[in-house]
Structures are given as C-alpha cells and as structure tokens.
Length: 180
Length: 120
Image (cartoon, each protein chain N blue to C red):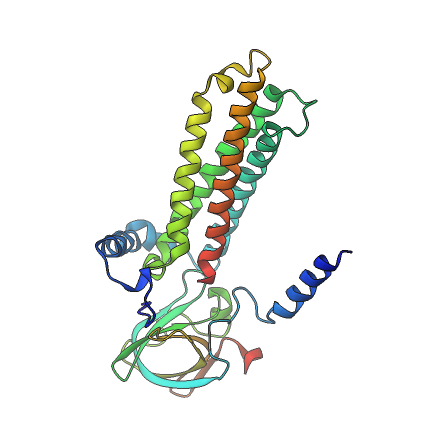
C-alpha cells in the first residue's frame, strides 16, 4: 500500500518502516485483533464510542486543570480542583488506551505509512513525560499543603502549557488518522 | 458576526460533503467498473467493510460502506468465496500507485449489493 510516485518519507522502505510493518502485522494477527473482528458489525462503532468518552474525560479534565494552572479561576483553590481533575483524567486515559488498542488491532496494517499515527504516539509519550515531570516538582507536591510562591506557579503554568500542546497534538493527529 | 467567522462558515458549508463519515476526497470524480477475482473475502470489521480483488495482476483494496450498512445491503462475510469473479463500481483513489476503490456496489454473479445506492 501507499507506493507513491512523489518522494516522501512514507514511500521509501527504510529500516524503520519495515519494523513498523512487522509490529503492525503482529498486532493485527494477535488474539486481540481476531477477537475484535469477530464481535459483529456494531463493535467498531461501540469501541470508538468508548474511545471518544475516554478522550472527553481525559481532555476535559486536563483542560480545566491546565487553564487553572495558567491563571484562570484563581478564586478556586488549586488543591480543590487538582484532585478530581487528575482522577478523571486517569480514568479517561485508561478508557482511551483500553479502546484504542482494540481499534488499532482490527486492521492494523491499513495504517502502515500513516503519518498521523507517527505524530500521535510520540505526542502521547511527551504528554506522559510532562505529567511525570510536573508531578515531581516541589510546586506540585506542595500545592495541597500550602499556597505556592510565584516561581512555583510559573513552573506549573509552564507544565500546563506543554500539557495542552501535547494533548491537543495527540488528539488532532488521532482524529486525522482516518482521513489519510 | 465578524467577516472572518462568516467566511469560515461559508467555507465549511461549501467543503461539507454530502456523504457520511470520511469524505470521498482523494478519490476520482468519475465512477469506474472493475472486474477481478476475490483474493480476500468481505470483512465486516473496522470503520469500513473491506475486501481485496485482483485485477490484471494488481491487488485492489475495495473499501465498502461501514460494516452495519454493508450488512444491510445483504453483503455478509463468507457470501462471496475467494477466487470468485466480482465486478465492483466506485471511485478509485487519485493517488498514483494506490490501488483502492471506494465502492458503490458489488456484483457477484446475478446478485448485486448496493452499499451506497444514493451514490449511483
């Protein structure tokens, strides 16, 4: 598939694209792929629905927390907002992964050479690294015990900006996969 | 409403295809027929039902309607045996070297499966 006349990254068989093809073929031939393909004509739509619900929970919660960290709704204490939003985001992420893998496994090899997939997954990885880095900061660890000093607020605002950029990139490229 | 917003709405209206889900952009305007032998039978899994046919030594990806819609047209998995001859009508990909057709109907013997009757 996707042998284009114009020179592009996707049309040149490199070591990377061979590895990609192998991994994709493996996922498609896995028991998960076989299971999802056997679940009937509405299964993909239903799994897709769970994926959307997961993303709604994930990004909706992240958006509220990140905007707060960037300076919105200062009258709401950060500690009040951070607990429910991070918990809902965690649940959303689990739902998105648990539905995303089955969707990908149905016809994985269809996505060989799809550039949006190669933007989406690194963006998710960067977003998770960012979460990890933010949660390690003194500011994040202290925000439930005391008010933050301006430098700490700036550190969290920085993390929030990265967070929005990475998650929006992941969601945008994810949505575009089907249109390639 | 600002001019920019109005322009955006107008552009969105013009750009919105009448067809459901992912548009048929990237496909030829013209409808063509292809006759070939089935190398991979109908699959009703995924966002669209699919099959693969061999036409003049080239394997074509035949993209059908979403699974439920394809099934409603009567086309189910296992109905068309591998190796049988079928004729498909649809719009081929405009991408050079990409053998893919978004399919309007499939004819197998005397049976026709109209997956997108509104596009005929």
